[in-house]
Length: 318
Image (cartoon, rainbow, N blue to C red; front, side, top):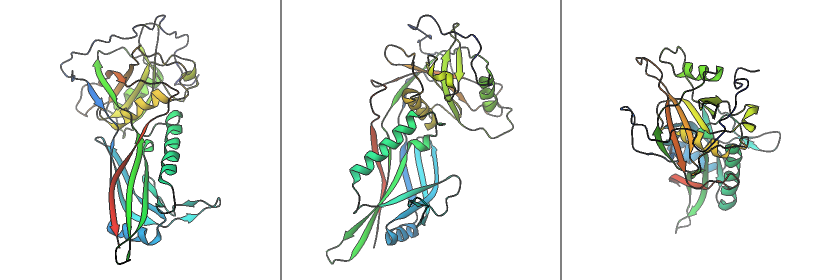
């Protein structure tokens, strides 16, 4: 038995009618108003030199750093990479350091925008349905299009457009009273990550949530084989500054669409449970755990995700 396995002999509650107290929390330190959790926005910044090099080549990669915080996915592009052709005949970045993003530049005059959009949506949906560790940055797909323009005098100029595609899915969160959490090995690991006495840099982690017969919450790794055999009531996120962190939005999306989950034990109205383990400040006396009931628009596992295209900016270059 691995340390992430569920307690031996654990059973799910016999009735699913009401798995937790749905009354809103009235704790003094909890916002009583429903919280709207919407998809992050998109912003791209790019240096003028990168635009000129990109326009001259019309294909290659725009390379820079990316960060996802405070509801905005920001890409800071600082260089152009013409790329190279690998052994499979595909153009790949020449150099891309860890933490950087390489944005492929497409020739807008030679491709179908509709085809490109459909292909990207399919790729994101496959990732969302997988059991690969959820990274909210990977729910975004950033592209750049270089389009040739001609003025009245027939002088050639170019327009570089940076855009992103991401799922259009919003949630409403209502804080509820705390539930007991079974201290499995995985739970102890999660509490250690957010503990105010931690001696290491924490990382954001996420997974799924089930329940035992006493209606205590049990955390489960989304890659655990038991995910497909256990009723799953929601998800958990740890190591975030607040519930507004984009990782929470991505975790909720993963719970709804993860193909490994065969039995979603959610409420009749589609609501599910969210457990958040925010980072405790260094001067905090203890770790706090937040519980939310999450609602969303009508959901069917078989329905495809809907996507939106966000255009950050356009740069013209002669």
